[in-house]
Image 1 (cartoon, one colour):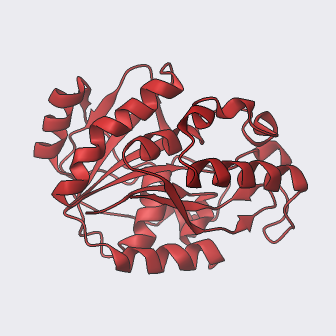
Image 2: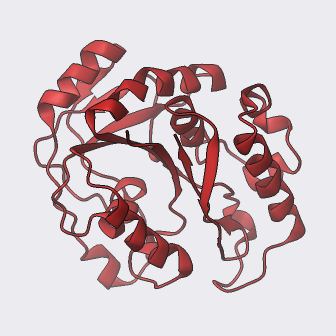
Length: 245
C-alpha cells in the first residue's frame, strides 16, 4: 500500500535548480507508480473545501519575479474527473475547475516528469482547525489502498521575510523547529502536532500557517512519519519530505 507524503516544495525555482531536494524528488518518483495523485497544496486556500474536476488542468504560474524559463514550464498532467466527483460526494466538497498551482506541479513535475499520472487537487480550507485538517487526511487514507498517492505540499519551515542566499547555512531557530517536528512525527505524537503552533520557534518559522497545514492532512492519511529527505535552501526553507505508512 502506498504511503501518504508531505513534500516541502520551497521556491518555484525548485523545478529548474539542481539542488539536493530537486535531485531527491527526481529519484523519489521512481519509487512510486500510482494510479492517480490527490494533492493538497498550500497555494490553493479557500473558505470551504473545494475539489478540482478539471479534465485537463492548466499549469498555473502563481508567482512573479522569476526567470522567463520558469514561466515557460508546462505540466500537462491529466485530471481525473470521476475521482474528483466521488471525492466531492464523500467529503462534502464543492466541485470546481482549477489548474495546478506551483505547490502541486513543481514537485510533481520532478517526480513524474512524463506527466502521465492523473492529478486531482483539493483546496486547503483556511478556516478549518488543525484537528479538522487531520480528520480530512483520515478520510483520504482509504485512497492509499486503491493505489492513489495522497500528497500534502507545503514547507516544513517557511519564513520568506528571512530569506537568505540559496546556499546559506540554516539559522539555529530553523533547525530547532525542524528537529522538534521530526521527533513528534516519528513518535506519532499527534496531540503535540495538533498544537504545533506551541512548538519551539513555530511563529518564527511560520508567520502564517498555510505551508505547515498540508502536513496535517498527510499525517492524518497515514501512520508515524519517516523523514525521507532533509536539506535547506535559502537558509530558512527546510526541504524535508516525510512518508506516512
